[in-house]
Length: 230
Image: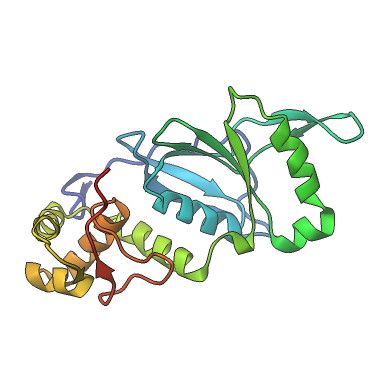
């Protein structure tokens, strides 16, 4: 089978590395998977999620330039409860950053955290994580990211599904020639590639080739500047 979007024969993605699987259907949650290309590997990979909130968290994670790998449902860890009993916990994701740090992520709705006091349980878990597993842990809830962040991450994930080397190169050429701020729309117009260039410019922002305000939705009106040189 030939895939015209990717310019070659279709190669199925690597399967999820999840150590805990769940039934495909549930009345209580929205379960599924998405396919992403992680910077830590060449092949595309399946990543599973168990709820709408987990899916949002995963998309936002994948949009972060510092994140090079995401392990969905990593191996469970053991910790002692407040009563001294041994318990187990499986984090939803284990993210590896470009500096080598690993962050274990638990995703819970705000209401459940408040109702069950999971924040106190999480504090115990976080304090007992072995360094071999993760350097730190993070509790993600509905209030951890904005609607704009999720919207940008959704679009980025969609745009990354199609590779377009010509549009990517054209946008990079315009960005390299920038000597003042330009809107994304101006960058697109300079390439004469219309929607293809918008997609490439959008990806370039999240790849670190240009900077803009990511606290609001990225549009053609978004003003771009060059990244600061460190």
